[in-house]
Image (spheres, rainbow, N blue to C red):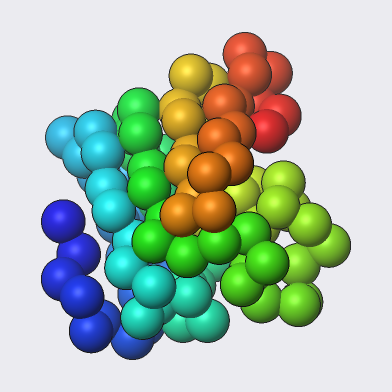
Length: 94
């Protein structure tokens, strides 16, 4: 678990961490997530403590945001505080 109050998670911070299966991203990090933070992980569940409308405007949409942070993670479930749930399909699309 990433503690509340953390403001930034740098590029590739947890990249290739295959033992990481689930993670919660506190709302304090919403604008401080680096690219590829979880690339190569085997996450099954990621929970964002912020809503989709709080995703930084430099992303084209939610799927762009998820691909930038997670890459391809078939079967992974991404949940947002606003209730939306996205699941990565077998080809890596969100």
